[in-house]
Image (cartoon, rainbow, N blue to C red; front, top):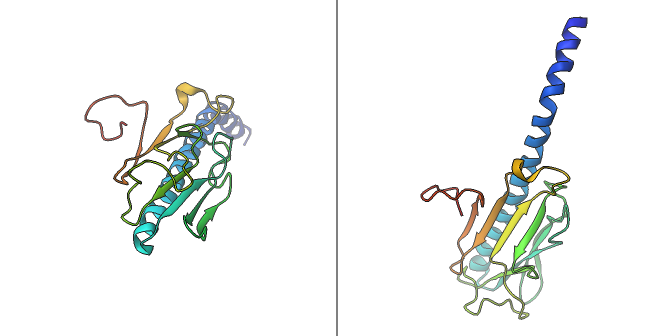
Length: 170
């Protein structure tokens, strides 16, 4: 019995750092897929309702600020909403342009030609998903990126892969 406990303690000592790294990378992936699902929902609802629909980030740039809202642009009627930290309490969402918080899809499921939301603010074209270096070192972090094209195509990719022809690259 004592031998089994010693072996278990040794395995845990060596395994915990890898397990912690895996958990943090899983949180990055979960946050990325949750946000991408929300963006896809906004696009689908815009086509289904034949009206402009917005995807709004709750608190970009903040640790655990992964909440978002999908709503009709004109009326503000909420279609679906998630809370901050849902799926990932450590993930940080960084939109491009930096001050943007909203993506508006028109009734055709595309971004407006002027690349502006109804309120005149810039439309998000890219969202980087990461965790702070205090949680996971940058060289061990599997960062993700969500890109939104003017045609409404939403894509999840890995910004660290630069090989041409690799479908995971941005």
